[in-house]
Image (cartoon, rainbow, N blue to C red; front, side, top):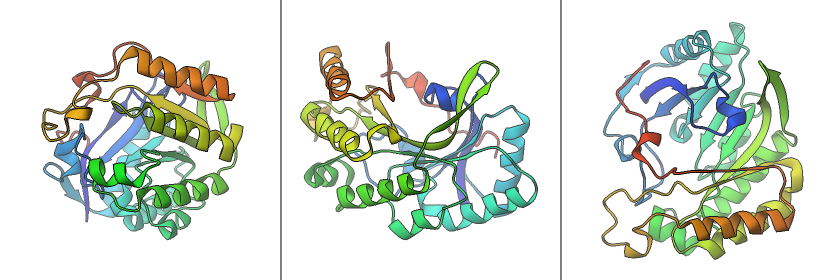
Length: 271
């Protein structure tokens, strides 16, 4: 059985993913990481959601398409990949033609990523850390750096080029890899190390999305060093660093993003 908390159009992904029509997003409940700063703890801890079978998930894909979705965005499906794979295969056999996108922490078994070859069109992985001590302290994820690097390598091997399609005057991604990094308080140096690693390893094969929406969740008393939002100066420094490195294929956030409004209601809508 699959544990799912929401299936709806999502407007707040990168512009090439959401567009104005929205990304057909399926939020899965449960996560194999334990991030102390998680904004979605109700679902990451499996506190909310509904149990469905594979055939129902396939049906959800078609319902989201009927609503005008640009793609099917599988959010934290990491623990359900064998079942998700079957659902995608079933949808394809029925003529489903939207791109499938895996939205993941990258804390994945390499064989799981390999098993998705030919099924996932767009990978949207995080590279949260490049220092394992931080991965352990803030996400209870030993070995995260090695696992994430290997997983992203495999994603880029499968999708070595980003391909876009014009849809109603908007450039919407159809295939490729977009790698996210969320800047955390006091971790500007690590963020720059991550940008350097990604650009030196993949160049312009991938898009790099640098995010400033870190939002304290009210449960960080034991982690005072990250119990704040990101300053404009910190984020500007990261963006300037990426530009000076030569990154031109990327995304940045503008305006006030550390808001609760970016967190949807996990009310089993669409399930």
